[in-house]
Amino acid sequence: MAKLIATYQQPKDAAVFDDYYFNKHVPLAKTIPGLRSYEVTRGDVMGVAGKHGAYLVAILGFDSMSAIQAAMASPQGQATAADLANFAGAGVDLMMGETRMV
Image (cartoon, rainbow, N blue to C red; front, side, top):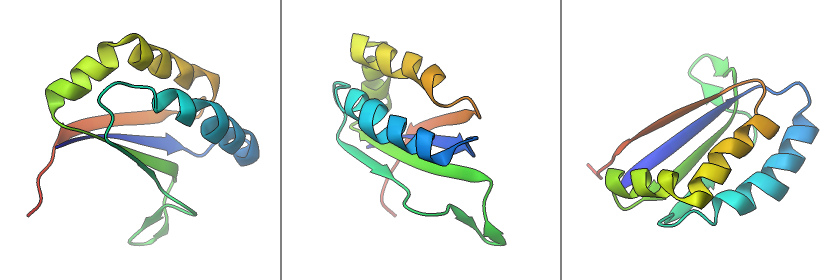
């Protein structure tokens, strides 16, 4: 399995971010071919010292890194990536990698 992790920074208006993210971006992202799972944090993102600077973390599961690459190259993946500019003005970090259970 492989995961794509998106860490969104604190938006200026959380209600506007949430409305756009859950009502427009998530449905768009769910059309990406090869997507196996989609998880998001609920409530505050916490660090060991308390509340973290990140607002929301999304973890998208795929079969492999090559599946992520194909997904992001697809028209749906390109549209989802382009959509970030519509609501993630505070910034988003994207990371990906192969995962395994240990």
